[in-house]
Length: 73
Image (cartoon, rainbow, N blue to C red; front, side):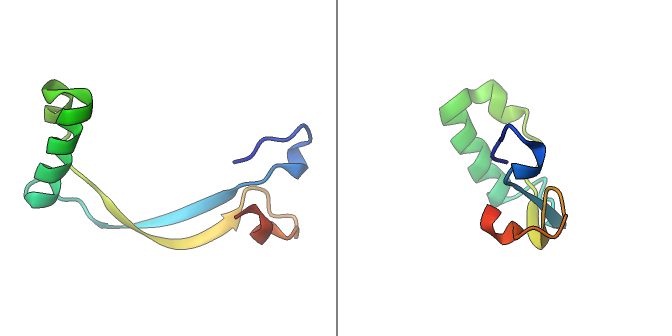
């Protein structure tokens, strides 16, 4: 979202997602945990239980009043 003094002038979108899969074991999770360990440490990496993959099903404006919301992208 891009803030504005007037609420109706704010730019932004709502994104609707559909879960594709939630791996709790396997190479995708292992790779993510390894990268997280480099950034945030081993303890933080061990706290990650799963990764989630989504597909975008719809993109809509924050406030749908007929404005040309595509300009928010």
